[in-house]
Image (tube, rainbow, N blue to C red):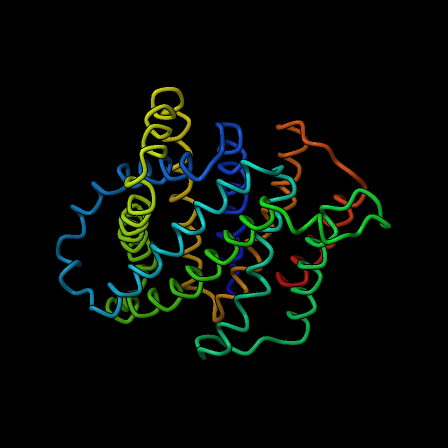
Length: 301
């Protein structure tokens, strides 16, 4: 993986943990993250004016992938918001972020969309997932399925499935876009266009899942009245962060490595949850975070 990709992903990881911490502070729910996504989309949509000439060149295959990516992004935002509603960020954030590390490689392998992974990379993925399994424990003898079989964990898994889906789809769509515009230095510009279109399709899916229900509409109106500034900033940070990741995908031969390296945000997210949100910490939480960090270092080298 190119050094530039590593730098971009590390920057995005700190930003990602930051907007998650902000989203957790503002009455987190699927509705709050839906509103953040809608506000973020409205901030980016005007930039389409600079891409008028490009839009007509986008193939139907890319449009189909954009619609599918938007669906998975919507699933991710809804699952993440609900997981924060029922559980601590310092637990739910690592689970939702690390599971895709295990899920993406076999999906990529089955589709034949990436270079083959080495045994060292698989060891790294195993360390990351093992760390996530340890995080919810308060004592080593305290392992039981009830720590994982609960609403918060179920929604975290839902978020992880969304991450897996859009990561795989986006890597394929961006490859097709780069074939349309194989110009040196165009990676960021094409990534920004893709992000804007993905934000629009994501918002359409979120609206479809939310607006038909009166309870969600009322909750959204109340959130907008009370927290629109924080939610707007969260939405802009959401899409800005992912734009950096999409740019990094242009410099990696397997999106699984990008997905794995993005999890550097996990230790940062745990620290933010404990220090900024006042969540409880145990030695197992730190051991789990250490295993995750070890796996990430192995991936990066």
